[in-house]
Length: 152
Image 1 (cartoon, rainbow, N blue to C red):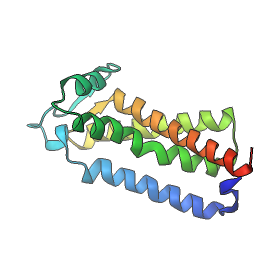
Image 2: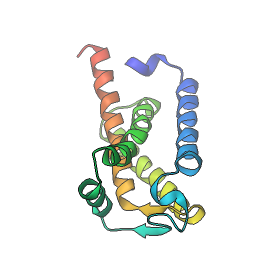
Image 3: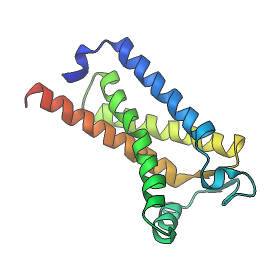
Image 4: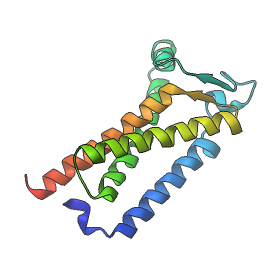
């Protein structure tokens, strides 16, 4: 039990700090693409077509940098969500997996809705999928680390 030794208040503080950091990045620090206002690419709109933006970014980007930054960034940004929540829940198995999945999905939907309402960014279902996948990667990494540290 790798993180069982860490007091819950430390994990809670780290998780709250992480959430605050994500909210800062997605609402204030990230100024790329459609976040440039109504005149920017995309402007304020909603994409509810699954895989549309992932396909568009992957196929039509001039190089590898944009897909890595945009798609990989969505995954990487939510990896700590799953990692920290795994240990905060202090349990393993299907229940923990479902809670992390649902929590990441809800937090991501919250972000997307608020980006649409309060900024000139695109609310995108693909971002929800990538963010949730990132959280599940974090959960899996925590589960593997926990198992290795237990000596199994």
